[in-house]
Length: 387
Ligand code: B12
Ligand code: SF4
Ligand code: SF4
Image 1: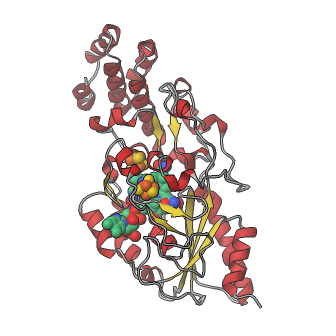
Image 2: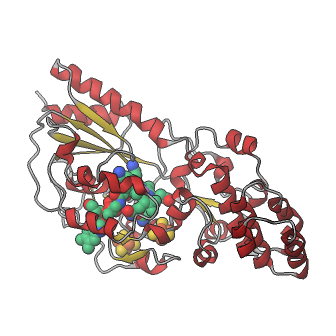
Image 3: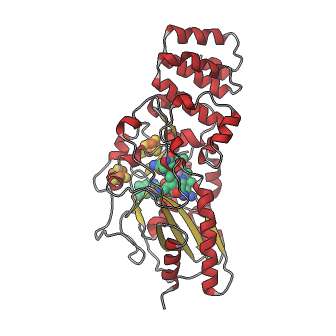
């Protein structure tokens, strides 16, 4: 008779379409102090919700008393390669790969429930459980590493042995003992042999590589394994509300939603990335480096229709158009001036302020005239400050 963990593994991979699975015992984090310091330093930026969940994240037993095992799952989401000339084309916006699909939270959660029902059927009883995709109070990467599915790289991502870091993570926490031995310390390389699918016989690590740290355009990787979200383009374009600090705008170039730069450069990814085969992950080709001029100006109804079911709706129209304006400013083509004038009529002061910046970046006499004409009508202090 196969062990229950074996049956779960087979079902998760074949029937729920996960690509990666591992098992970790419920035990306190190895990085208690690191997580607490991350918050103490303010590296979580405006993500105030993170502060409230630190205690549970570092001690998953707090999820529920009878929690025994965390089943960690992953899906390869790599959609397509971007040739260098596309990535560097200033007239196009680059959207992070995870966001060119329908929202993965909504795709993966039902699969976790399906897996939970399978376990209940096998055991002949209801189980106590929690199902999480990203938003749960758990350290998803540490757990995935502890379960032996990969290691944490200097760019802070979980690098899976088969797919690189292009895996999205999810967990099913259950009250079932699955015979998983407790592992003391993991993330950097050593793994739980029982669940490891890879072919690596020596501990996997970054070695001497520091490419992600060197290439990060905003120097958000402040030291190996530590990311200051305040500086990260992913945070600035997805989570940050309001005006983007001026110091980061040029470095953002044409990344209009999320950022994959520290993953694109990673040698572990280069040799492992392969297109996702998940049946519910259909890459939207209209989000493959869209032309910036197709994204601006953009009304609320246009935004809602275009990004229905997309993770991009998280930024809201204001945040997304703001990001597009940063890219338009970085493109700085003088022919954009009449198009940008629309942004000065926008009801959102954030959009007006970013339009001013884009015009200033173009810097032609025409662009300056448009700003000056607008100045007499503008009342918002933040937009005036930008002028
Ligand atoms: C908050 C958050 C963000 C923030 C902060 C990111 C960060 N690095 O902390 C922002 C908005 C910037 C972000 C960006 C992205 N995110 Co995010 N994010 C999260 C979230 C919700 C929490 C992460 C967290 O707890 N951070 C706090 C730090 C302290 O924890 P940590 O990074 O996991 O670090 C651990 C170890 O590295 C270690 N450690 C940390 N520092 C140090 C230092 C030393 C010296 C040592 C030894 C160890 C060590 O301790 C920590 C705890 O174990 C998770 C989902 C989840 N619930 O876990 C998704 C998650 C990490 N994000 C994900 C993704 C896909 C992204 C982006 C790629 C999206 C994009 N393309 O724009 C980028 C990647 C940026 C990057 N290089 O990390 C995936 C990552 C998948 C993977 N394979 O790693 C996750 C797991 C979501 C998911 N369900 O798939 N994210
Ligand atoms: S996601 Fe982009 S900005 Fe953030 S750490 Fe990686 S390279 Fe830097
Ligand atoms: S780029 Fe190099 S240092 Fe960064 S995560 Fe990949 S292997 Fe590690």
